[in-house]
Amino acid sequence: MAGDSLGTMVVAEDEISSPAEVVGFTAFHRVMDEAELRNIAVDASHQRKGVGRGLLTEGIRVLQEHGVRRIFLEVRASNQPARALYVSLGFQLIYTRHDYYHDPVEDALVMACDISAILSPSLR
Image (cartoon, rainbow, N blue to C red):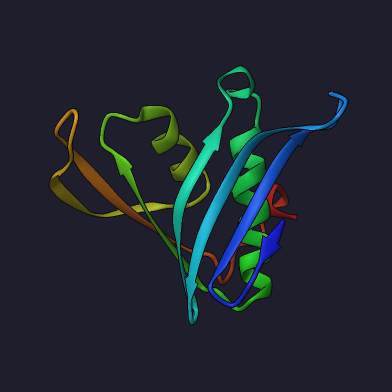
């Protein structure tokens, strides 16, 4: 995990490998008491194993420590696995940006989560 006044990154490593291999990361941009999830990526061989959830929950924990109260993100409308993960962590649809993505053209769903009161066991 790394952070500065403008951003926070969380990195997941496969510590079984020698040397340890990076298998995923999240990048957040902070502005005052809000943050935006700029990017999240998990290596294909480590997807569907909880790595993304772990990265997001650790990012939320760190952001809470820095006084962040709300996180925003954008996701492709067709990205059902990511959408399900975000909803399970408390993100809600705010609005749709029509034809936002290209190659292929697709809507972006803008989602937000109030993290000021999240104390669920998955975030401890």
